[in-house]
Length: 150
Length: 150
Image (cartoon, one colour):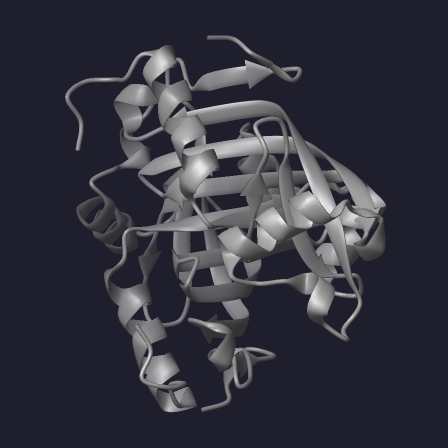
């Protein structure tokens, strides 16, 4: 897969490509007393933040609401982007129609249409890392404190 | 991908196939105060437990040592196996040669050869879930309290 390590600019381009086009990612959360949870979810990306939706009363929904911090994995285990983000809770009926429609069109899943109580969670990346193989571990940090470094 | 939902027996077979043959998985851990962490790691499987290795002083190494609980994701976001496991810490030189050799052969990575301090972490599954698409959410639990239910 590798022709030598990618530059920071290449990794940012590949990461933004995934954010713009992938449908699913891995969502790692934790309870207040330190029990980890992990589940795949669909997402949308508006250029600044990711939009997730999950049942209010699921482990992920409860952890996101209490901890307000999340770590997301995009891509494959040997072509990974990892995002540490801050979480904003948005009640289902409080989101404008347009981002909700975008989410439903991209993911094929409209949480506004369900009887199970769902919430939106808007995740703003604070730190982003991306690497493929061991030769890319150096230079893997692409964003720090919410700012792209490349 | 789907010809209707798989049976429990099919999901167990597919899960054991992944455990026996895959090289990498997603490792979700949490700090004692509830900060989630996620990273891809290589693993081996001896039929009863997974063997991982990571630096003692990495976030994952610290979280595994303090929390003794982990949630692992194998496969793809739409063909997933999730494992909640209990963690046993094994110091590098305390593991017998044979499982260490197996790990190195399978993963192409021998943590015994490094100067950075690493530890082994043996993860015994307590709960296993597997599903592909929404039609497989029912019946996704394959193991509970450490026992296969199928």
